[in-house]
Amino acid sequence: MTQMPDPSRPLKIGTRGSVLALAQAHETRDRLMAAHGLPAEAFEIVVIKTTGDRVLDRPLKEIGGKGLFTREIEEALTAGAIDIAVHSMKDMPTLQPEGLVIDCLLPREDVRDAFVSLHVTSIADLPQGAVVGSSSLRRRAQLAHRRPDLQLVEFRGNVQTRLKKLEDGIAVATFLAMAGLSRLDMRHVAQSSIDPGEMLPAVAQGAIGVERRADDISMAELLSPIHHASTGHRILAERAFLARLDGSCQTPIAGLAELSDGRITLRGEILRPDGSDVVAGFREGLISDGPELGDDLARELLSRAGPGFMSA
Image (cartoon, rainbow, N blue to C red; front, side):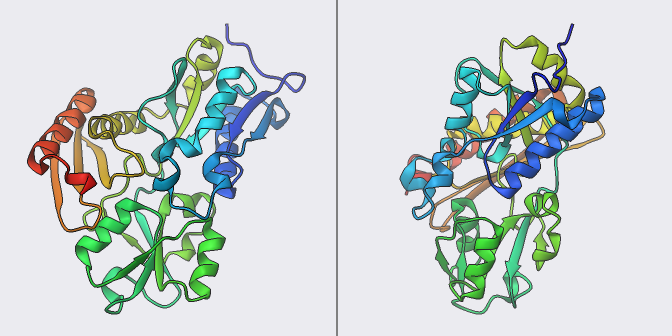
């Protein structure tokens, strides 16, 4: 029988402390409240500062990649200091620490990238040689491939920080995830959203995952009603694609799975970091074959790209 949390022993939800991370943690709490008829007092949001949050003056590739936003939270989960952890799935390494599992995905938000600028409405309208800021190697490589005339600069920080950098003239434009803007009720910040056909999003962009200890069966039963199955199928395919590529924040990789009429279509691409070349492909098949399709697509792209492609 599932042991329900209560105010005397609230369920501890671990999260990063950014405004967006807190919004995701509160969405998880609210869905659990609704699914089980529990009060807000039955939950406690526990903020855990990660290395990625502390070091803001250096590119992610210089300080360790994706695990920077998850390591301390997962250590707290393993130690029992929190009961579950809420993550942006695009931040998650493909290999999880032993004893932890993510088998609960919330309904996926808008997967598209947002084009953000104070004066320019789209990528096509950027002036020749314009300065564009982004901390994402994927976005930078995709942009360099389409517009090699642009100047690309490092751009980290939350939404407010990036908007201030635009106001200060450090760059003409930047990119954010539409999913994050939606969850913050800030879609108006985007001048436009970019169709995935023009800029394929990051693997798992827009998806929230809830991590638990693998042996915590009570927690598995508690989370089961809020798991969104179709999101789960899409993320499994995309992360299988990423895993075969050994993807991290140091490799420009994009991928998107979509479901229709009982089938799954997966598009993926890998790029040279300087945007000078891109190798893209797709797979389509049964939803249940999603992970195999992801792995197979990654093998094909690696074969076509040749050795050293992504580190050139």
